[in-house]
Image (tube, rainbow, N blue to C red; front, top):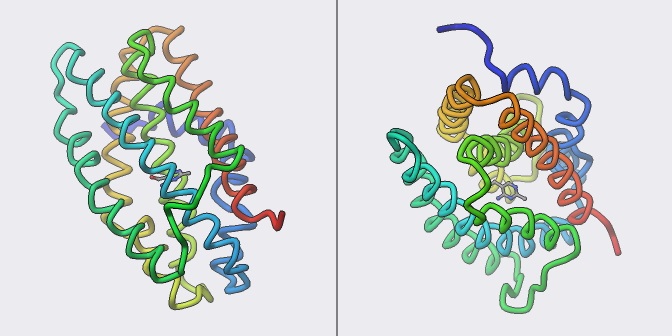
Length: 220
Ligand code: HMH
């Protein structure tokens, strides 16, 4: 149908938080062309570490999907997991371009905190609906943040456009919308308790994403 789902209602209800995550000074500075390149390099190294943890997270989402009644969402989750292989190669190539030595990167506090959150999903007690909703919002924050850097009027430095297009492309947006439809379908069938847990996870992701951008852009 065309009715707005639960996730759209959350985005409206928590619009302030959502905008702090998706219009953060760091990504806005990319769009403005004023980005500090040492901050970009810091983000690159930290996000590489994050994505490696994200692989394990996605594996746990996939497992919950398969263990669930019909496992009908398996293909979209599996395609997301498979595309992370290419993403890790992209990070390595990009790190070389920016002379970031990935072997020497150690996780900063906000990254460690975020990775610990991701790791908690390996617990079987965490339900599929909470996991799929978390997966959707994690991807959506990047999609929305980087699409803004490629939209009309951007002054994004040409050497950063590839990064922005990785998450800002129409294809990635469609992928996020597929995840959103899955999350909304699961939420429509979920208990009030499960839906409340999913909303808490949604807010926690926004908080962690803001912390991740703060960490990337801070000069310390
Ligand atoms: C911190 N959030 C963070 N890194 C990412 N690569 C994504 C979301 C999207 O996959």
